[in-house]
Length: 228
Image (cartoon, rainbow, N blue to C red; front, side, top):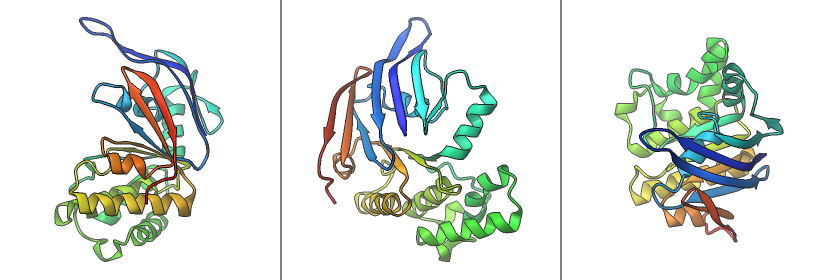
């Protein structure tokens, strides 16, 4: 589902910084994988490359059998729209839109009619146990509820790949555990391939596989029985 071959990423400034150094890895369809490492190890850079938000300096990335190199910006936007759902640490909800409107927004951008988009958004908000908050604005929700809305929005097109950047990092321990349980449940029910960047050991150990980055390189790839 996700394959990287000798991927490097450099950022040019007063001096060139190599954020990733020849990363090669493969994540199979339906896996739930955590990506960990110290600050500056390249985790977010790697997630951005897989999510087509940035391009590698060298190397190849393949998503769902499609090679990304050579694709135009419009084609990359289509890959991102059709194949990838994003969950961010700080929710990134539009404050003037209701929960329903936030979840339906990606569908409107794909040309869905209002009634159909609203119906799908209602289904997803019910799936994340927020059917009673459909008309509320983000500021009227708790942090955990806002993250549930963000997850529903990420799932709006039932993407085969779900990328999460510190999905519990802005939440208290109890709420973070609830969100993690929800992501795990949705992964099992929908069969999406999940890759989560995290600093939280319990989040990492909830996945059957953990990839550890250090200084822009994969230094360990651990398979285990996930801790529930």
